[in-house]
Image (tube, one colour):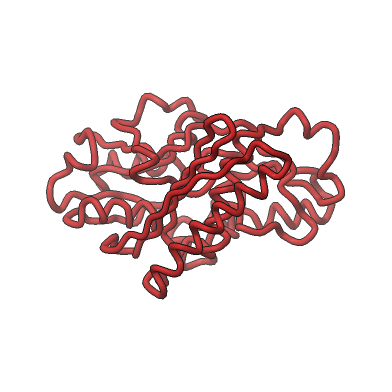
Length: 268
């Protein structure tokens, strides 16, 4: 269990961000105590840690966010002043952009803990990753799944990262775990993340889809209160030998366009 899992009484923005979910595992990998690590890709920083690489990305689970509530079918159905529980700045900002009249309640913990807190009345609804619910056999719980084009999820949400030491990146056993379509999509999403220097202190969503050789990417960044949203969409051809570079370049371009428009507005 990492520090990010153990510390549940403070927001990630206050205790070091997403690195708390990866740092200790990466230290074990570099020290040779383990030979590979499996991370939630959305917890990974935009750049590889020195000496380590993301050697494989398996097929992606459902990338969407899921809306859960004992009473309400959707975010739009919540009454004025209702409490939405989330520890994600992105989810907070996207929700407030659509519903500035609701209250955001900081809610951390694993899936069971968050659901229990909602059922105990700490929040009228919560938003969780559909992928996590599916992996836990809880796909029946969401009242609604949120449109990933209208409200893009966290970059690489639903994907796993198989991390190894750099010298082990081409180990034969990794070949069966690599899924090209997923890799192309999350490379574009993480390109935008890297350019915008995204962290738990920045509300960034990105979602890429592949149709043949055409990759389409939507990126958005919001102020924490959701009152301002900056959004870009674009496409690129990823069918050739340089497909990964093209995907990452698309993410960079859209991230750059957002950064130029937003200026200092996104700094929390």
